Image 1 (spheres, rainbow, N blue to C red):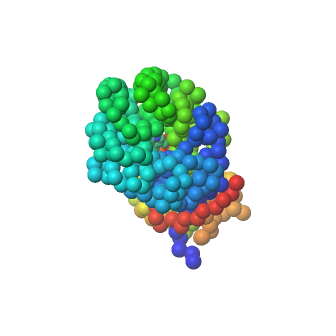
Image 2 (cartoon, protein in one colour; image 1 turned 90 degrees about the horizontal axis):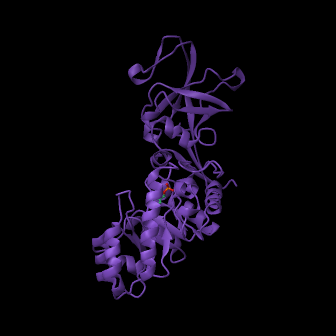
Image 3 (cartoon, rainbow, N blue to C red; image 1 turned 180 degrees about the vertical axis):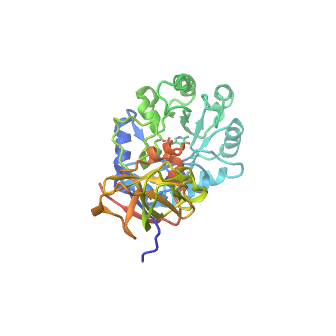
Length: 369
Ligand SMILES: *Cc1c(COP(=O)(O)O)cnc(C)c1O
């Protein structure tokens, strides 16, 4: 049925490839995967199964309800970490379902150990704030707890974590400062928990180099084809392709206008195509007069404002034999329209584009290696 809905194609072969590429770039022993927010909008089930089949055994989600969704897919075959930790009252649920909270504040940590002290198998991770000031115990809180409280815990603390604020900016002074702080508290933590593992790197931090790697990597965006902060030496593949159908082609004269607000004025006679897909599909309004599409190797600039259900491209540069017709599909994200490059044009990041891809797009999964 032709409905003028856009197509969203998700290449699970590329997700596998990207995970292998991150694992190869990571010098530590274990590469995990961040699959929060429905695997960055691409769907838990297909993404988690693809990563699991490549050998990924450590998955990170944002909250408990996401963990429950992933747990249904994996049972106890992999570790599931909850980055925002354990809210009050859910401790028993975490323990019962063998989901690992990342304890992010002193009060959360103390509560966890007061409630779980009798649970034999109650693994947890601890996050220390090393300078981002978002989540995590302060360095001093952690050091005090290691000195005073930690010895009483039967429960196993298996992982110490922190997160970099500027990993996508190599050479930023915070990267060194955070590394120093993390190394210091890790050494103290290992006096109390000799087997504790350490994790500091997201996708971009893997490209910062081995000193930032430690034992367990947490790449997210790179798996889904986002290149923010990832070295060009890592050959990532495009995962998401969004193609929008042409609804109408028209000619306009020099001096005529396009779209709401008449924000685009033609500087010459043009041929333009209106396609089905707009900000309700995640093709955000900030793309207005900035983003582009590709058709048969020809780059087509977006002209005028993006509407809710449609937007307009200048197709004047297409040779006559490639002239677009109703129903033809043009790529707006994908191999030729790199998601990170498109995001930059709209002053945003690929993370935001991925997690906002609209429900109206017709979703297909493919396995092209
Ligand atoms: C989202 C997140 C990651 C993954 O980061 P990417 O930049 O997507 O690789 C890793 N660690 C934490 C704590 C996160 O919140």
